[in-house]
Structures are given as C-alpha cells and as structure tokens.
Amino acid sequence: MAVYTDVTEPQLAEFLDRYDLGSLSSYKGIAEGVENSNFLLRTTGGTYILTLYEKRVNRGDLPFFVGLMEHLAGRGLSCPLPVHDRDGNALGELSGRPAAIFTFLDGMWTRRPSPEHCRAVGVALARMHESARDFPLTRPNGLAPPDWRPLYESCAGRADEVEPGLSAEIEAELADFEANWPGHLPKGVIHADLFPDNVFFLAGELSGLIDFYFACNDLLAYDLAITLSAWCFEQDGSYNVTKGRALIAGYASVRPLDEAEYENLPMLCRGAAMRFMLTRLYDWLNVPDDSFVTKKDPREYLKKLRFHRGVREASEYGLEKAAVTKGMA
Ligand SMILES: Nc1ncnc2c1ncn2[C@@H]1O[C@H](COP(=O)(O)OP(=O)(O)OP(=O)(O)O)[C@@H](O)[C@H]1O
Ligand SMILES: N[C@@H](CCO)C(=O)O
Image 1 (cartoon, protein in one colour):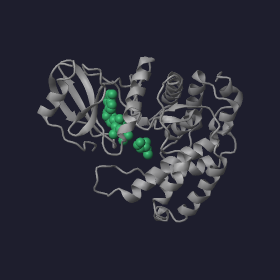
Image 2 (cartoon, rainbow, N blue to C red):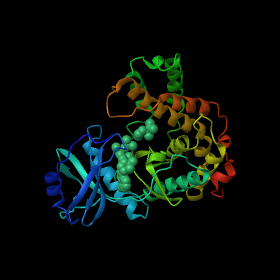
Image 3 (cartoon, helix red, strand yellow):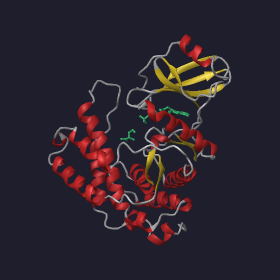
Image 4 (cartoon, rainbow, N blue to C red):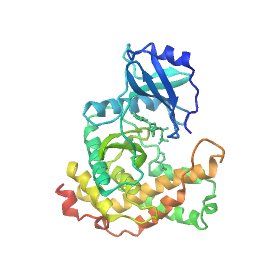
C-alpha cells in the first residue's frame, strides 16, 4: 500500500487553510500506486487527490510534472489539474514532504483492455504529444538507453537468478541498443509510463490519464512503443495484433508517424521492453519482500523483449506503412 507518510487531521486542516477549497470533511489513504503517498480528500468544496512526494521523486522535477499537468489540462486533455493556493502556488509542504492537491478524475482503470480501449489510448497518447508541443519546460529521461547499462550493472550480475543465461542475453541487447538506437527520431514530451493502471475509463469512454511522474523529453515513437507493449499482450505473453492495430491506428489518426518512426518500431519496442524489464529486475533483486512495494515480474517483460526481437518488420504489429504514415488508418 502506498501511504508512506502519515498526515494528521490538524496538519491537513492547516494546509487546507491556504486554499479556497472549503474545510476538511474527510481524507483517506489510497492503496494503489507505489511511488508517492496519495489521499482521497473531501472538503466542503468537493473531492480531490492529495499527493505527498516521496524520496524516489526528485524535488527539482516537481515543477515539470505539475506544470505539465496544468498545461495539458489547459489544452483540453483530461488529466488531474493542480489546484493553486491563494498565493498561486501549486506545490506546498505537508508532513515534511512536498505536497500538491489535484482535481479528482472519475473512472476506473481497466484490467481487461479491449481493442476499443486500445484505440482510445492511442488517440489520447497522440493528443498528449500534440498538446505538449509548446510546453516550455524540459526534463531529460532518467531511464533512457544510456542509463540501462548502469542500471543493469547495479543488479551486480544477479540477473541469472531470475533466469539462467539472462545476463548474457541482456549484455547482447545492450550492445545492440548502444550501437543502433534511433536517437534522431522526432522528440517531444512523453508520458513514458502509460500502462493500463494510468488510464481511466467511464461508461466505456476514456475519462483521463494520470501519473505523469516519469514524463520527460524523449522520442515520441518510443512512447508509442511503451504503450503498445503495455496494452497489447495477453496474460499468456502472446501479442494481440487486433489490439496493436487499434492502438497504432488510434495514435496515427491524430499524429501520423514519419517513415523512420514506423520502420524503427521493432527496435523502439525492444527498448521499451528492456527499460521495464530492467527496472523490474532491479526491484525484484533489491526491494525487500516485506516492503510496501508490490514487485512486478521482470519475466513478463523478458517475454515481450523476445517477441519484439523476433519482429522483422513494423507491419507485423498490425498496420502497413501507408496507413500509419498518412494518418488514414
Ligand atoms: N486525479 C486523480 N483522480 C482520481 N484518482 C486518482 C487521481 N490521481 C491518483 N489517483 C488514484 O491514486 C492512485 C495512485 O496514483 P498514481 O498512480 O499517480 O501514484 P504513484 O504512487 O505515483 O503510482 P505509480 O507507482 O503507478 O507510479 C491511482 O491508481 C488512482 O486510484
Ligand atoms: N508501470 C511500471 C511500474 C510503475 O511505473 C511497470 O509496470 O513496471
């Protein structure tokens, strides 16, 4: 459960005094999420989310994350809008942690994505990319290809504990990424973690995106690759081409890919699988079993990595180049 920092009622009431949100009615910790402490906050003015930023989030990055949500919401994208206090600040301090209040988004994330969900997510991702074009702040990706080798090395040669031969497999992949990563593709602000638990649906319609705490500047098509890898595989590890086609078509209907982006999809998807396999591997080997954090299985992403390695052409993800690059899909 992700409530690392306790907040007492007097502390919260004092914090709320600085806002025009009415007085405190109730609050309770939210179990989901692993990075920060989140509370469902009810005041006489409405329902909100209170987030306390924990140690793994760099304080210097907070203006980027909070500013991005404000920018996107201002462009009509449905995402949490930071609430400002009477002095105009979106970020404050509560229980010794940086803290912010956000508008509450209705909806729930889906455990069983359908092709329709996938299409809607593709559309929303492309809208996010387009809406962030004129966002003035920048943040480098802390989990970009050059960061993967140090992350792997911090696992101190223990990858074979997860599966014999995994160290050699990762080494070979890293060498390939270091030599062939298509770093020249179009860049912009990416979400970088648009998994099903970060997308809400209400009555079958996409109602919002949350959790922008990995957002950064990187390759736009890499974000598509992350999202495709998170949404379009079944429990048994097989790729669902109908979902893949829907997601890519949804994306391209708003932002058509250029030819180089399309052709590099297999490499970008392999990279996406490597990034999530490595962070999961790190947690698997280093986070104590009795901690709050639910460790996610790196082998799920190892399977995806192997699938993507076997993809010879981007069309195997479900759409021909002409459909995707012209935005006619
Ligand atoms: N604006 C919002 N409206 C409604 N619910 C929200 C909102 N923001 C967060 N939540 C709820 O809080 C939970 C945790 O939020 P979030 O995923 O941002 O936390 P986190 O600790 O940063 O997570 P993660 O470990 O996924 O990075 C979500 O699953 C959702 O239930
Ligand atoms: N989405 C990540 C975890 C949190 O960001 C994963 O599934 O590994």
